[in-house]
Figure 1: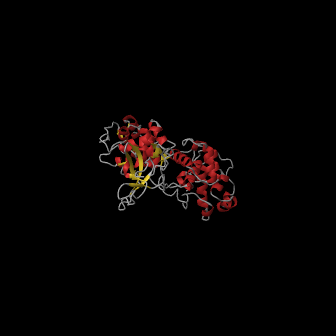
Figure 2: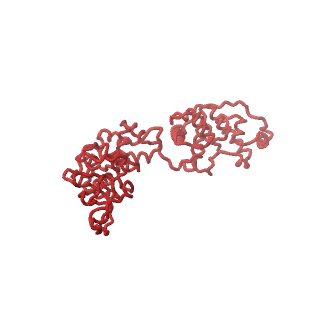
Figure 3: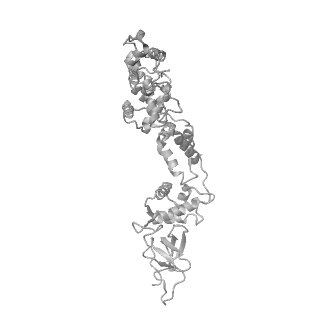
Length: 409
């Protein structure tokens, strides 16, 4: 048999022993076949059908020095083979390699221009490129593949990028990425909602920008996105140094300031139950992290309305916001300033105790609450104050909401 029965998907090896090149057949038209390199799908070209053979030797038994010989064991396998699910389907990787080669030219054509030259929908071409880039198995019609492979090899190919109207997509992409870097919980959908543009539009720009560097975005939509410089809650500025222990101290500090959990949860748009769970397990989620930081920014500088929250926080020895420094609140080894604990109450003197008790009385705590706050027993307090002051102060001193529970001096 002098020539092979050539069909798409077959793999042939060069008969020239100095070459060793293998090719994959993409399309057969008339007396010629379109082929690409079998290894990488590059170098599309056309070969006469009479140049394909089934044997390395001629009828006379002489070795062939030109043309291509069929490699049955490679047909349907390999990096750039066709692997057609049906006879008229070919592997899309063969085509995408050619398209990427076109996009690397100077000046580069647009994906839309390539699609127009091949007379196929631009959405089809973009979907194929995205699927192949993601490693998904993808086939395409033989005729469509042949049309794309012909682009750039004929006078019908896109000679230059098309004149486009709108804002360059790269500008919008860079702006969105900078927002996501500066804010937590800044998803593409949230940024689109804040800007007042469809989320699908913004996602398409970001996903397809790498495939089409010259892609543009509608001027009106791009202007809305570029106008967003700050994001509202639940997004919040990214603080890489904030730790779970720091968040816990902030939440406890707000409680000590008189803010109930429902008031703390409200600015961040979450339920108080979520904050209560954080107090129990001491492990934050992005949503909890956002809510606590937002509440800390809005509420930590003013007293809350709940005397109950203050009393409960005092019983648990939770330090108020003024006891913490911004530079140390997130460090596990940090201790609140001006707050006495059981480990730091050995140096009591009568004058110091009187000063502390007077300060806590002004803050609204009675005798029992004050001693608990100072981690001091009643017997020890009477001993320090002496016989003159063995009488306990009134047990029901009012806790006025207008006074904040501040750290002891």
